[in-house]
Amino acid sequence: MKRVYFTLTLMSLFGGLNAFAQTYTTINGVKYGLMSDNKCIVIGDAGAKGDITFENEVTINDHTYPVTGVCGSGDYSDEAKDQKKGFSGNDKITGITFKTGSQITWIGDHAFKSCKNLNTIKNIPSELNDIKSWCFEETGLESVDLSNTKVTIMKDGVFYNNTSLTSIKLPNKLENFWDNAFYGCTSLNNIEMPSTVVGIYNHVFDGCTSLTNVKFNDSYTTLGTHVFKNCPLDAVTFPNTLKSIGEYAFESTNLKTVDLSNTQITSLPNGSFYDCEQLSDVKLPKELTYIGEKVFYKSTIASITFPPSLQKIDAWAFQNTQLTNVVIPTQCSSIEQGAFSDNANLTTVVINGLECYLAYQAFCNCSKLTDVYITSKEAPVVERYGFPFDNDPKVHVMKDFVDIFSGLKTSENYNP
Image (cartoon, rainbow, N blue to C red):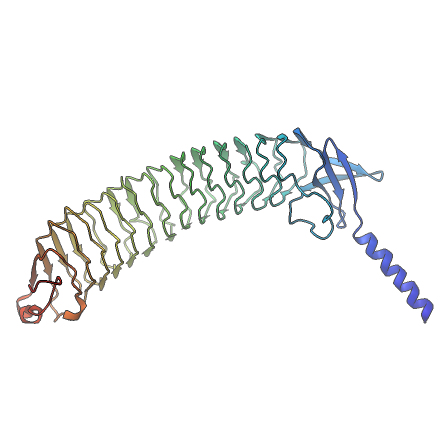
């Protein structure tokens, strides 16, 4: 029994060593390794500088293996923990070339992070299907062509803060942009979306201060939060497939017109078009039920038509716009604090809601507001009017309800 036990222990020991054994070779400052899964990959930096080339295959222990990937900081964490994985922080690399026929299918996370003098990447293999998160963060890349690759996701922060990047050809089969993919790419000036894109998530183009032109396809469904914040976009086409826009998605853009009438959007979340000072023409979704806080803050909208489906206009939604009159639809039951405040040109408000709540200062600082019409043919609940005005306009109500409204304070100092 003892001898059997000893034999099994030795077999187990040597089997374990073999399972995790790797052998390495270095070519022109690039280290290649044969991993326990029998795949040969670029491990990373072994003094690489200038323009580096990734080999198609390397010979290790008299065997030739195809090179199939480029290691990142999180890859093969147990096996290559004693190796420098990827090329992160190498400011001596100026270019990358993949040899024709390369079988590399993936590039790992943070693989080239902060390679600030990396300017070019050439002959990207058509078999490439995965560029992992933060791979090219803060490099010096100027243009990238991924059009013939099989990549379907631009992952988190993949080109984050590439301030020299002026153009990119996206993969023809791209489906989604994950968070921060092109955040802070201040020189990027043009994007053409493949027809396969369905989702553009949070902060994807946030801070792309040269991005004036985005050519959209007609199939995307989702736009995330702050997705185009501080981009000088002046026009966007919204397709009928669009179902949602995230908070502050178009904050501080140069949009002049917004036509959402054919979209499937039912809710405009907080700040969707916040601080779009050139926005003067808006068409709302036909099935819209909710307009969030500060959605059109500081736009130059002079008139707008609310759909019958609208149920709520939240706080400061139209603060500091150029509206001259407002007509609230019947189903709208709530206009929250400051929703139409600071509208210097507003003269007339018509409230058709049966039980519309007007919050405190809903129409404050509207110095030209002279007439408010409350048209409900049902007895109003006076408590739902919370000092909405501060300049004492004339409040017109149905004849039968004059007595009900006689005690209503539309401002803190005035009974109509």
